[in-house]
Image (cartoon, rainbow over all chains, first blue to last red; front, top):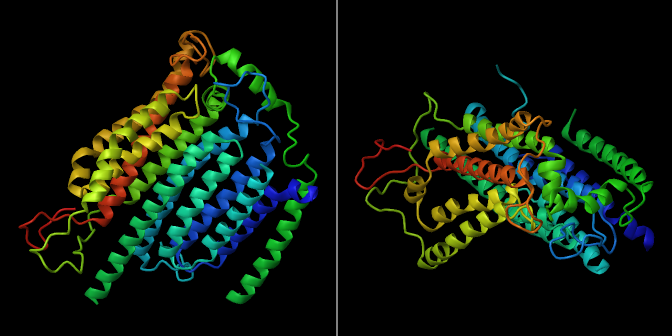
Length: 118
Length: 85
Length: 260
């Protein structure tokens, strides 16, 4: 039981990574592929969250609690926070590429977009 | 507290699987929006309010909005191509 | 390589990857037993050194401010790339929406419930967004979170009005200038430290009192600039995507005689 609790966030992170990759590999529509990429990015957040957590501790904000109380690691939170907003704009760039792919190549199926035309 | 953490992790795993195994993009967008909301609740339970703040707006509003607009544009192009042919 | 063979090969590789991943993480101290000194040192010292009670914002904009500058420029570049890909091109045919054959019928207006709810929520959203940006160094918040909250205000106007109202309040030029000011301002704030003889991005504003809104030094300034940049970037993305999907025709115009 203790072993299970100890590895649970990392196990969920590994499951999300592998499931998202499976969705990317077997995808038949580019927009479906982009949403599976979001799932893969979520697995990194879970990994960072699991590494920095301290059992029984509170959030690292000392506006109302005194400075000595045990708090979780703030650096992993700082990394995750900027990453989430940047993820949204990178997805927007990929969606713009999808629209252009439909216009130039005529299809949104990755199987049919194999040959590069210059 | 531990019960809440275990429960929300299992929900996130199930929702992530549901997002990947839905093939139709239009159905998948709704699943993705719900997945984003579950993630925000998970960040809150794991004592990370700043990250939950970002995730709520981005995961439930911005990403599904842009995906839906892309799907509209792709469908319009498909239908106009069929009309021309 | 047939598709079936590719899928089986992927499943075997994924199983191997999962085994090695979990085996590597097994040797860490485990979930809930955080050992490292860096987080504890920052938690103990950050309030005294920077007079900022939100340690995460202090880490983002002061202790690791250079990394955040890089991330902000990733955001800037992606918005620029999406805008570039979706611009109006010379050989772009303006296509009629194929189902719009009844010219004398306008689109149905949005329901009254949506309009009332949207207009009632608009002011609290703007106020809350500005509060989140300016109180980043005290409570959970900061530039990134407040910026995305502020960017949802034009979206509410679009949802409870129509595209005409959205176009009237958002101007492409204003959003571009605001985004450039936000991103460039962050880099220039670091350069101002050189004038005082400090290193790049070192604090030069007097720190103030802990718990006050005007505390934290350059953290507050950089947070405001980042909020401006994130909000303007997301509004620019919305403008580009909306222009793609909506063909706007005023009542009385002939078909083929419209502008997007």
